[in-house]
Length: 156
Image (cartoon, rainbow, N blue to C red; front, side):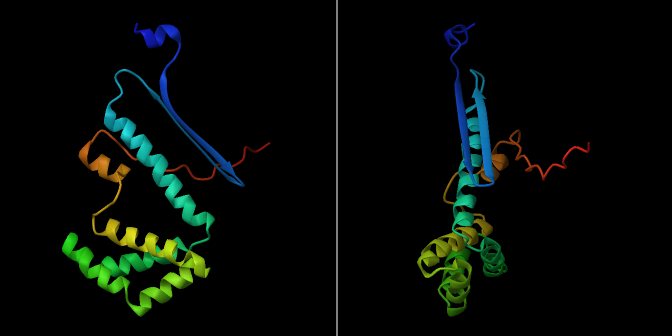
């Protein structure tokens, strides 16, 4: 046994949040044999959860922006040249209108634009951060867990 186990202390990642009806708890015990990619995978999952919720709390219509990002990135090469082509389309009047509608409030326009830009880049296989998807492609033993659906209440 190592010193950690004898003293009862251990390394862990523990994240929890509660806001209104939203509750998230993500925990990971880190043992001596835990691989660095497993830790990165877990941290990436926490970041992705937070990113998604940040836009939702601001009531930005991410579904509208996801659909539009799909339209902008379809038929475009999945590389940096394709991103350059998609960026030209993002600056169109149609894009500005869709971003304004999705933002809901004028002051959320830049935030909605950032979301659209990120989604277009991701659709083209480019990303700004380490993601679980990226890590799962590199490390085949890492699997993305599908979120549980709403659980039915037990019948009395």
